[in-house]
Image (cartoon, rainbow, N blue to C red; front, side):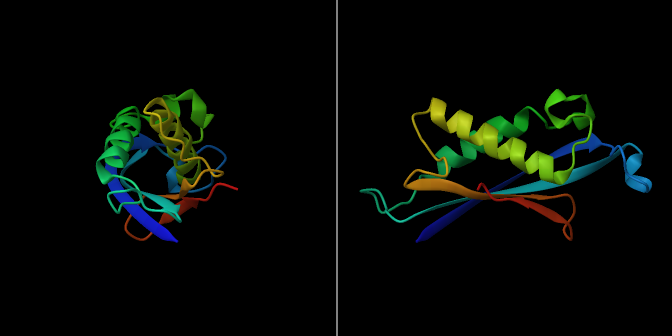
Length: 130
């Protein structure tokens, strides 16, 4: 099994509803994102997947949420937790890559195996597709 990982970051504000603590107030994070791809076969160039394709797709996905108030984005249902952000990134990475002719869904030879979203250096949420 091979695995590659790309990383990027974005900045955004949010607040958490149904939460009792300081995070219920509007605040911001400099999020760091890792996207992991795994598979059993390398292409003719000896790569699992070209890093540039992945990085370009991730930049496109993150550009939609960078420097926003995440609570204003309907998909987060007014509660943009790191877990929901990770799912959002996963689903949108699949969409962007599919538009480029790449299937990285859970049933393909190469697949996005997990997405990590760090709110801080110490706090991370991970989404692993079932």
